[in-house]
Length: 102
Image 1 (tube, rainbow, N blue to C red):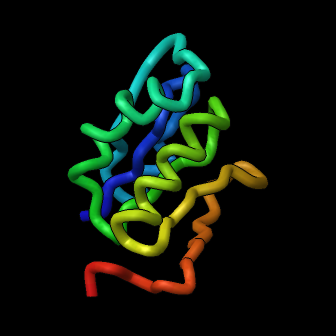
Image 2 (cartoon, rainbow, N blue to C red; image 1 turned 90 degrees about the vertical axis):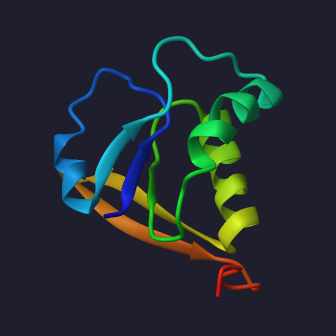
């Protein structure tokens, strides 16, 4: 089953994201905007990610950027869940390199 990585729990109801996979909360509360800190915070949680997993785009831009970079480096693509019109909409970004796991 894919995982849905919520980068920072902002107190929202993420239950509808469960239709895409197991929701994994990566952090809660205050997060420093420092990019190196964001990398250290996310690298362990996202080390178990698979190419089929999702990132919920919400919260601190620095966290979203670091998580995206980690997925692109590892897989050559990243699956996002974007909350739009009261539901999550999946979007995929693939680099020219394609999927590195294949």
